Image (cartoon, rainbow, N blue to C red; front, side, top):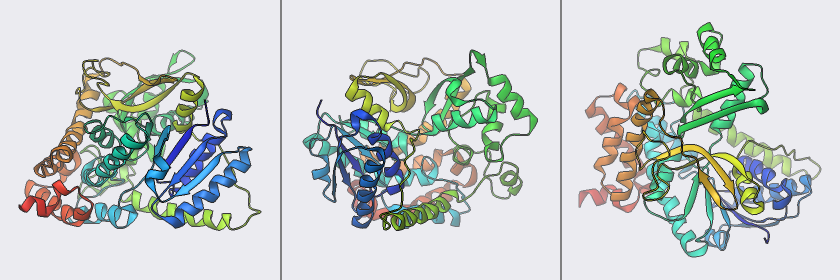
Length: 447
């Protein structure tokens, strides 16, 4: 096969792009890849272009690298499209997603997956992804779209309803959490055998073993001991209540359910160590990290360290290029094809699930899981309700479903009454009007 053509959309996310570039170029079959870096921010794109050259030199790779602000040029003939955009940016969009709800007393931690922040992020992101997919249908119809953008489930679902471009959603929560749990038990993660399934950010380890030993008794004993890591109190509490450990971090999970963030209950915030407004802090840190990297690149003598990450993107590309079989965890539709049956039996047919997938030259091949424990499926359904209504608003142009999505969000419903929810959505839609698809904008609604 000729050198794979890889388009990186949103390459101005320099720190994340650096990790992916290191992963890709360190694999022999990909070291000569045709890389197309795209971003709408020329300054950030220029930095990533420099990073690509320095990373290539560090690992001894000889790729072809093009940087462009022309998306069609980047996509033209691409075999793989890696997507890492953030529509609306930290300012104004992310700040709006936090500050407007906060004025109603609704606090959040990350606000990029579910909740009122996740709904708004989907409304401004899915239309851009769909527009990009229309370009792919013309310019690279056989490509594989590797999506790293949140809200993962709503993005994948929204695209599945409207385009035939092959897409897999990639997250690192499964492999990161496996490493955390192994460390909690004093075991090397390389010796852990696990099976995980569910929805993105709410998948659970159905099996977690070390050399044939079920590790759940040890994890449950740790949960009961009260000596759990301070940053993971929420998830260990859910292990006590549900019997299984969830993949996404405690700060994420705390806002997907109605149990932990409550006005007037500062005791819960302290007891479970919940970092309110965590994502804005991370954004500020990432901005600082980008500036530090930019300054490092200004010194030609400064070394760029390259360490392999746990991201699946490069491994998927390598498996499809070389035929080397691998298992990754991907976000795909629960019924991958009409009449094919459900991957997870007790979740809706038309939802996005996170399951193990075999990858080889044939592409992404999801694993059929069967039935989840009923308490896990029931919890996931509370999040799927919000995802389904948000996607329905995007596909049909019915603004009422945005209010319905907020109405059924577990955390929002636990904090606000119906009048407050409607008013909050009104305020957020006004702030987001320029980011919304034409069918959902306020002027359209008034006609």
